[in-house]
Image (tube, rainbow, N blue to C red):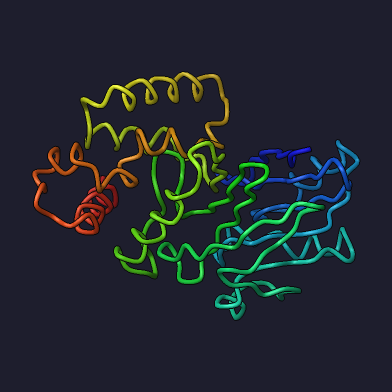
Amino acid sequence: MPLEIVTVPCRKDNYAFIVHDPDTGETAVVDVPEAAPIEAELDARDWRLDDILLTHHHDDHIAGVEELRELYPGVRVTGAAADAHRLPPLDRAVSEGDSVTIGAEAGEVLDVSGHTVGHLAFHFPASQLAFTGDSLMAFGCGRVFEGTFAMMWESLQKLAALPDDTILCSGHEYTEANAAFAITIEPDNPALVARKAQIEAERAKGQFTVPSTLSVEKATNPFLRANTPEVKRALDMEASDSTEVFAEIRKRKDAF
């Protein structure tokens, strides 16, 4: 059976993701903005917590790790070897090319640096899941705080190469604000216009807009579309390298 996921809202606009293998009963959580909502969801389902997977070192993704360690003795914490000096103490340090398991299912570790250097994503192909943290996000991508625009673009291309039906679990409820920006880049993209209206309707009802799917992001997310003729033409950058186009879009979003 595929892995089950539970989207857990935390803090103001963060998400954690509880991931459960129904065959083995083993359970993991990806990122821990705070412990209490995660504990409540686990208790409601009578699930034990076996693993914590961390995408990057920012406090709003790791703040609840030590509290969960106290609540669930023996839980194993996995994060980036390159980031071990600024993550909570790791039981396993991993790098791109390594694998992680949740229950019986293996996932691959991807280095998606850019937002931070050492940022990881976790891809579980059998369940068509990718946990992308603050790299590729719904209708957007993370700010480039530590890496370079070229580094971030390369990371997004890694994620874009995953199967189109991949379910993308990203770290924040930023989708409505991202949509408001995206429409300034491609106002005549019908898929984008329709998705923006859908997102606004969902948020008006208090619904989550995460996870999304890679196929939807490819059709509507301007950061993934920096290499398309449509976006280059819209920005009057038809002769520009895709990395330059991505950088221009990211700079515009930073000032939006």
